[in-house]
Amino acid sequence: MHISFGYIRVSTKDQNLDRQVQALKNYVTDEKYIYSDKASGKDMERDGFQNMLKAIRSGDTLYIKSLDRLGRNKVQIKEYLEYFKKNGINVKILDMPTTMQEHPEGQEWILEMVNSILIEVYTTLAQHERENILIRQKEGIAAARSKGKHLGRPVMELPKEWSKYYKQWKSGEIKAVEFMKVVNMKKATFYKKVKEYEGSRVRNKNAI
Image 1 (cartoon, rainbow, N blue to C red):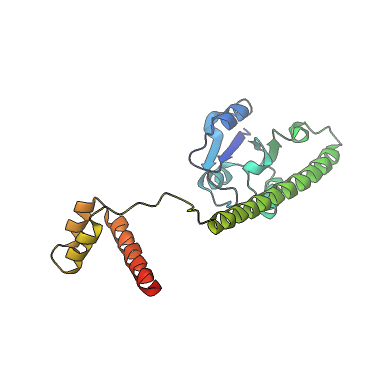
Image 2: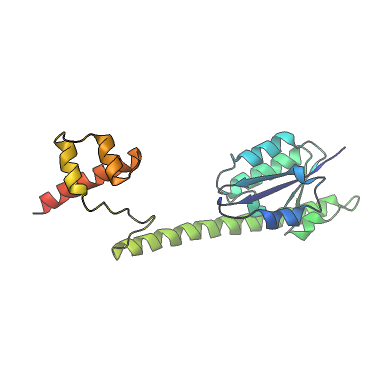
């Protein structure tokens, strides 16, 4: 018995997969055959995708909502599409209606040609858009930094009496664990802040 699989993906853990599940569930043999990932499209070594590859067989069908759910890298996407074709796996892309059509007997080559052209155009556009996004991100970061803006997570301010406890720790009056406790920091955060504090002291000293 041939099985209809589904593959869905979002780029981050905060995003929801429900919309893609709803789109695919009427096409797959069972929802248990929908494999998913919450990961970037630039990497094809995703757990859900790789597990799906292990399960799918010749004669089976793979449904995806859109081609960019496979990934953003044009070369890798085309390699996997060739892999599916070579291994007798049908790929149906909901956002590309021609791939959803049945092949008229004797005219399979026509749909295959049309789909190949569409996939070439789509993957090229997707990769260009990805590259443009990265360029805009870099430009935005550079512009923000030139204005002195901090990017990323908010910087944790040091407790008011940090300098006092730092001196006591350095002089051996208190141990590191005691210092961590009074400033309410975990070990990794504590040593990170110590490094930043000591670095800022050196910079300030050199600036005098």
